[in-house]
Image (cartoon, rainbow, N blue to C red; front, side, top):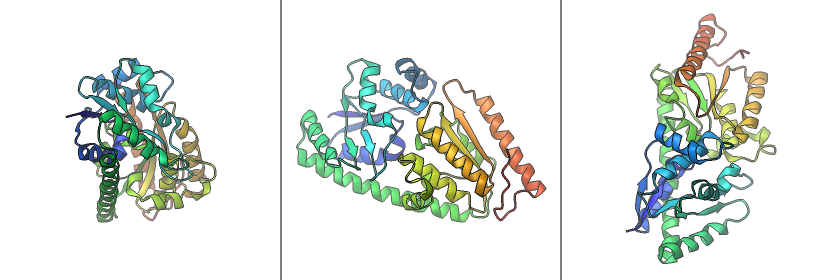
Length: 324
């Protein structure tokens, strides 16, 4: 049985259900790399260009950790997942970057996703995969379509559960945490931010609690200016949650050297300062960031919010004052 390795980084946090279901349906064994840890981080930093962002470095570490555990490593080539929207440029060339950086003869499988202009590339790449794996193409294409239905159903169910949970806690103080899914959901890269807030009895709102249409509707001011899908997700989420009466502040978690975030965080901060008057903090992390300093910034931000609430500057009804 052919074993396919899935690196637990970048796309994995959004599409793991899709690809795990797909490969199992075509009769492959699936092995997933461990959760991000210091060894994986150090390995990625060692083998990857110093010019890229932290999540891409970590992804290289995940790939390297699978080299002796799988026959092929699966790395999709995401260019666009929605009409008129594009992914980070590094996603477009990720398979090539990994081949060039690791240089150890790893075998990579890829699927091309270019929904905006060349949706047929997906099935063309599935044909190539069928040849490599020596599997009938119809079986591959059927498995992909079935896996997509499983993925879509799973996404809907998860969204419903998150909305129901948020509704049960609608009177609880909340903090909105923004950022790329692979930053927020990777506990090592995020330094367990979400759980640290929850341990303080704070409800946490993240972009994956909103459906695609809501995020795009509330990012309408920037849709002609920003064409990155994750950028629009964070813009729409920021402007949605900023008007939630329970949200006391917004934290944006960004990796150093992220080109998308360099624009998006500025757009969010300027609009919040001008119209919503809600406290906003951007935290930038890289491989040198220490957890003690990270925690200190979180503590200071929460202390500020608590002080403002005590002094009446933030009302329970969502009328906020921006603090420089």
